[in-house]
Length: 284
Image (cartoon, rainbow, N blue to C red; front, top):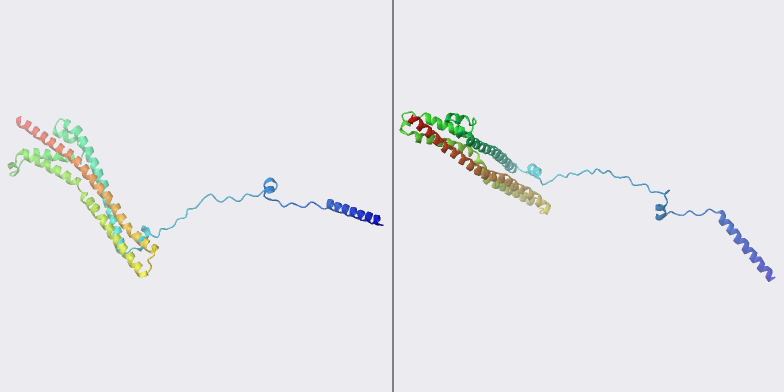
């Protein structure tokens, strides 16, 4: 009895095992969830590339609320008037600086031409023709020649010819020097007064800024830095106007000194030529 029961249990266990194996063979294999490594290795499963952003970057411009535009827009008539005066002074000084430098270089070139050709001419009349029309050296030569040839009159006869020619040549040299120095006073004035005009604008701007802050009752850094920075623009503009004027003034004074040495030397040589020619005529 016992042996039969054991045999029956063994048979049931074998049948159950065979049934489970058959069911396992019929059911499909479970799908594996792709992981990171499987996605990288499997070429069929590829991750689509992200769209490339546009390479063109646009630069955002931010208006400066404390710049010159704000200073002009928010300033009163005193601030605007100060800026206008500084701009006019700057334009005038640059105009004078450029024109006087051009004139200085031109006289330097005329001095070189006079040394090359004037004293190599046959006579004084031909020598005058070698100089350019409108040049300072031709003006001096024509003045000296006219004084040498025309020494008549009841009053001029009381002056000897040498003194008469000398004074005429000297007056011509003084006229050239006066013309060279035209405008230098403006440069000196701009160079000495522009910083103080800019300082006045700064003081006025700071006064208005502090008054506005006191009325508003807010003394934070953003409320103070903006108006005070705008006021300091005035000092910077004043220095920007003054520095080129001072440098240009000193440069022009130096160049005029060199040019006037050439003019005076020419006048002295011209006086000697005129007196020598006159003595030869008198000897004949």
